[in-house]
Length: 484
Image 1 (cartoon, rainbow, N blue to C red):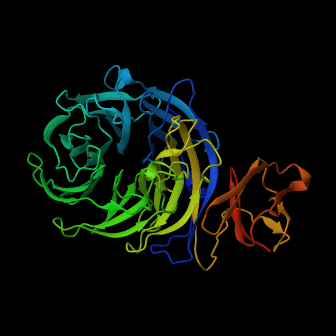
Image 2 (spheres, rainbow, N blue to C red):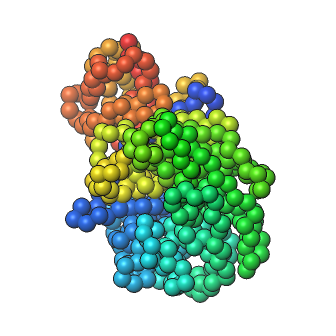
Image 3 (spheres, one colour):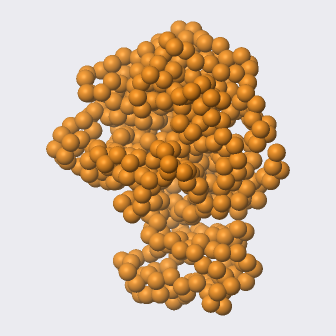
């Protein structure tokens, strides 16, 4: 078992704490390392998870590949060290769709959900040693064969989002002896042209919020685990310019009575669930604008899919955005969710994110491999991408975490010199981002070259304020530069 831990990395990525953001606050991303799977087959990392015990690992639920463990002790060079294959997880054809951690136990949801015919299932693993995981138990059933997209573990129970088969509740009080408790098929609403299927889960006290792909949201009272009861249903209609489509919700995060839902190719919607029998849409935001044509599948630059919340001290929602890769939202005013930054400009590469996780200042994207021409994005590689992030407050209270860099001339109308710290001895990554946090350009620089200077050509940028981010092992800092 590797002994390297992440406290050094997490100390490096600390940022000013701020519970409620203000209109000028911005999220800035810094590019770390990535790992792409072999492209011989359609391999994808759907849902990644950063180890919650502070160890330098990322776990990737990777569909056909199984569950891949990455060593991220060097965040600039994440490396796979172990794979739980389909045979390990349940048998030939089993697909890993989600992973959740409870101390040193991993809970891996199984059952492909892109097409039917896969049993909804769950496996539990002892990850005391991530290099040599030990199987604790497997559960699945031929009674429910529409797949499984997520597992939500809370207390002694695990909840499975079992697509057209609704939800399944399992007793996991003993991780070595998974026991079936109950199953509930949820209601359908007016015909959307697609079969509503349970995709995302959020548990608030005894109310389970279920996001439906092709069917809105359902609320389920799970106070009595053996007899869950649906108590509410909601189906909204997303506004488009040339047609009207129902909300296809892929995941969910809730803050009290407000639930935030990423929508297929269509941004973010906030729903007030305080009255289960009369839920109301409160806000809708789509950074890609409205699109005509045949639904949102054509003409959109992204696809919102998963949500990761950064916690109360920073209060940022990180959302996977497919071709746009990562979107950072401010949820403090549910009536007006605000984009605070994003990473991965659309239509400039062949990469698209499906899953996302955030922990202690690090973000990991799970890349899919989508080579179908009729999708709005084309993604060549599956795998993971690591990022760090910081919250820049509206008073420009940027706190350097390392010896400061110098950027001059500032203001500038052309090439800037970035003077690198004398203490640096490794290659740097230099990112330029705009005030919304959107990555504009990135390049590498070696501090031993050019008398410890690097050069960034900003002559093509529109006038305004930008941030120059510099990252290397042991050094991280930001400077604001004005382009005239």
